[in-house]
Image (spheres, rainbow, N blue to C red):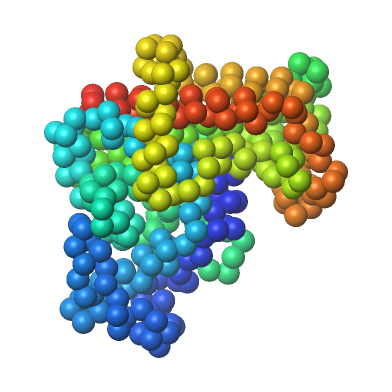
Length: 372
């Protein structure tokens, strides 16, 4: 299992039990804090919510607040939304309209997608960006006494986000045997969800959910550490895509996988995402004509690119400075015990992340053009 599940547990708070129990156990606090002056934005319109909606819709709004009005988490939300924005900029208006019409049928459209829409942003574009992060929103919380309600987590599939193709550094060859079958089902999930979106006989709700997974997983498969696990004498069961390795880029130790997730930054305002995407689209070094990898049309080819990048750019062919994270908990790592990050590593990694993000955005657009 890769790192977003663990990282989500540090950043997301959730509601306890089903929505009815939430309202019952916190009725007074909700009334005093949220209900008297609450207004909820849907489709760029504001309406006083607390006096006109039935109880069920009030609960939905409260759950939405608890899930959305929190620090962004998890590439992370910045990376996924940048991929989606690149794709959006490369789609015709007619295709955007068809995609938006389908997303209207998503079971969490008002709860998780069309919420907190800035007044200056087109609702359809905002929903498209949030759809790319929705599979992370439905992850169950871990390491907490609280749990998201089942109508949120029912859509979670932990092993869809990655594949653990085994990587053995040259110095470790012959010292360890990786498993015969890699963990993770991202390749199968991509193909299955694309087929569902393309199947007009499927219920629109199912197609909308599958579309969100497609938007998200095309981003995931371009993050190198979502496609490999390092095996060695130190990691006989694998390092879970860098989640068991600590590096020290500055003064503090960080998890290798999480560091790669955050390479594009952590800002999630619309302006930040739009500027990121526009910068990448307008970079002459990242023009379509310069992205030779675009000749690879199959998901397996995209994964192979990430595996190669992980070997050379993430693990440095076994020369990366790191320490093993005892028990998988970064709190067990003493910063001073982690050697400084290899010279030039961050610059090279950032350059690669920009290229992988550009490829993901353009490929996502190409896939959507064939579906809509």
